[in-house]
Length: 238
Image (tube, rainbow, N blue to C red):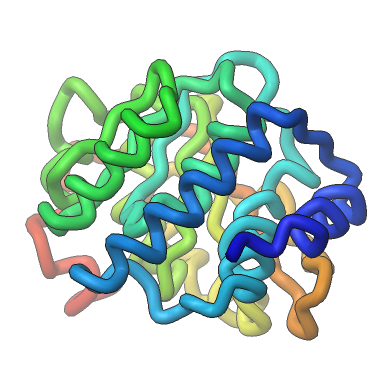
């Protein structure tokens, strides 16, 4: 059962607002996530309270630092089960959202969520970021690129920054070692055309560890050789 009181308390603690329609969308998303997770591997987090705190509320973290109210074109790289992209889309329905995911079964799940929730201006795209980042239809077209993956920042930068438009942002959801990852990523930032604009630790309601949001501005075009072919960024980080 969806832990509604916990969810609403968390939303209030983060100074965010949702109406009845959005609450219903979060409930449907919750139901679909748990149903599909019995058949395909979407998430290891399946306890209702943890879905709310570790997925929903955590996804909201970037909204504490950035505005999503201007109808921005947003990309969620390695979207998985749709976090953080779908929760942000529910909160801010005016954004145009692309969910990039390399596993077909997960893309099928994302398309089902999009349809069931009636999310307009939202697409689930099957493909690897290394290939889509070289596709003229997606390269350097997004105002905001999000990644909540477990990969090191050096890898995420090569997968994500080529998708951001010059003047746009890449937003990485990181853990307690964010400062160390940022130090190690300086070379990658220089090569790919990015610059750290903000790094801030945020307290997520009902969570012990802080979530660190790293915001990177896209200052110059990414050289055409990046991203490199699939698998190379992980094997040979910049």
